[in-house]
Image 1 (cartoon, rainbow, N blue to C red):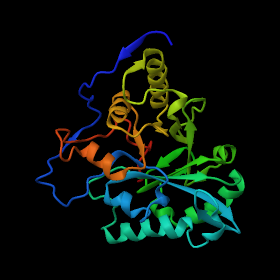
Image 2 (tube, helix red, strand yellow):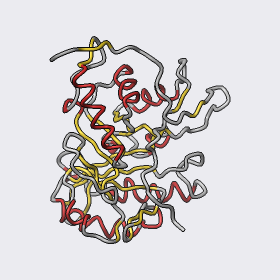
Image 3 (cartoon, rainbow, N blue to C red):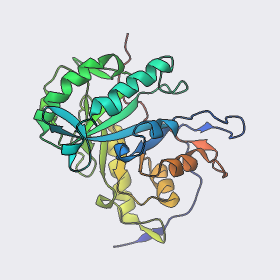
Image 4 (tube, rainbow, N blue to C red):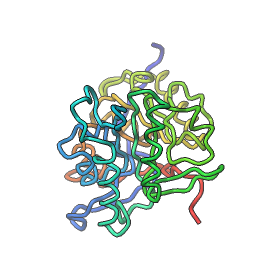
Length: 290
């Protein structure tokens, strides 16, 4: 595979570091700008486990079944009460109301709710639009060329209604680009860029990392960042060596099923890594509300 280079455990570059101490912050939830709760709805307490661990990026898969937006990974037919509104939008609205109008009092950016569409793109989006309008006061919006930040940014992945969204002059949803293709340039539509880890890398955290893969991967990240998109990889090996490499390479969101483990890694609780990482590309908006 050509030349290889040894991956050394060097100190991470400063993205925008918030130095914390565990002793002085006991009991406080620290918002983790780089933490992404993958398939969040599969947890015992969807949404709340992510919030309790300080996650600022959360994923929910949805199916349009009998005019309901059901949150599920497979076989949603017996889960009619597990709707997107019941599991995420209403709880988030209540959480904000009970927390003095904020999700995290010490975090100034919107959190991301990624909605992965499993059924037909346009039909599902048509059902989603009135629901988003119902919670519009909380959501980042696009209105005639200007993006207005809210407390929550909705990003659509999976079966994405790209053409429909591109033609809308006002909306409450954005799109996740595909990092391995990276052909989408519009920052009005695309705020994120994701792909499977193996599309770029085969390194599992031990041994050597292909220099060719490393260069190609970092070039894709650089291009995505130049276009104003946050970068996320899914199905990556879940270990500290890979997480260190992804952060050092500029990846904005660490996709995980291990919430507490990633939290410990990012905050450095019980270790010498007493840092919370936030990318310089952390803001998902281009303008502020008046």
